[in-house]
Length: 100
Image (cartoon, rainbow, N blue to C red; front, side, top):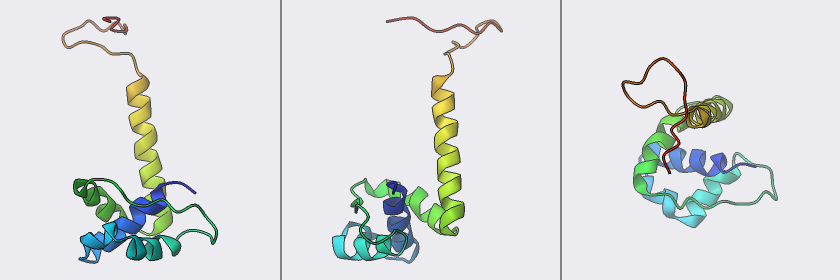
């Protein structure tokens, strides 16, 4: 499984009005177990509290929809990072910024 299960479980706890439970191993494990097969590797939620905001927003969607949206956003950011950098005011030519 992916670590998204951990994000979704923490988001569900935060959206339910109990964000502190995202950092309670037993409560978080129980929330995560509802969305992963038995015997899967458990990934504790160790991210900073501000990360609960996007997790709680995703947790308002059904699991599959939230997972697909998360993956699409991740792929979009990776694609953006892979594009060559074009400094502000540069011409329309696509060139890489090769400053060390």
